[in-house]
Length: 86
Image (cartoon, rainbow, N blue to C red):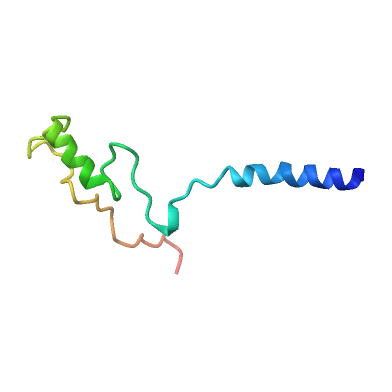
């Protein structure tokens, strides 16, 4: 009897943290972004709402920033071989 109660309490104790991690997107769909984010499924709606409500901050074209839909390009060249190595 004590053995069974020990096993039951151990099982329930270990199952708690596993069940607490069920915060994924439902049915395999992509997760929406956090409120106010500009990426993911909610991004276009959040951007439109920010523009409509006046929360979007306009940036002059010559501000030196990265254009909206482009990502920074890092060097694509392969690193050179150090001297003395084939």
